[in-house]
Length: 132
Image (cartoon, rainbow, N blue to C red; front, side, top):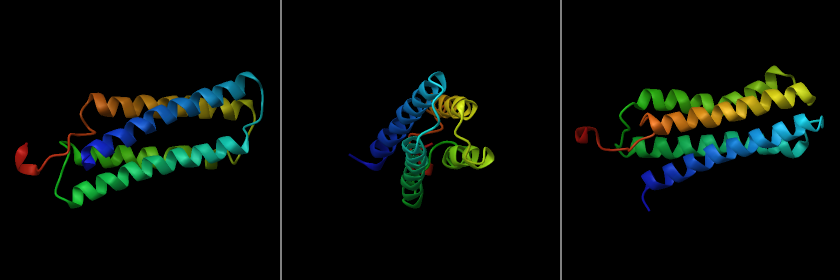
């Protein structure tokens, strides 16, 4: 397995993980439960997973490989890394029903954004620049 495959597998994990975070937050909102500490940890892991995907992308970039739209790729990945912790900061750690709804919507938005990256070939394939 090369880095292209690893990058794609990790990115797919990020999509499915975002969907799981969205379902979990929606469940807590429907049940009117406060957001649990487990969810906060899972949220941090989701951002960490996006950071690992970006790190693999950096390694491939240092090897000379490039996707067709590398600047757009890094902008999207920066967004995916900071947006969930950013919402946490913006909401000042609230854990009520409306916060759960906000986190659910954002998690589903992250999943659809990531899926659109795959559909629009922003994710790759990573090739040498002269291969374009």
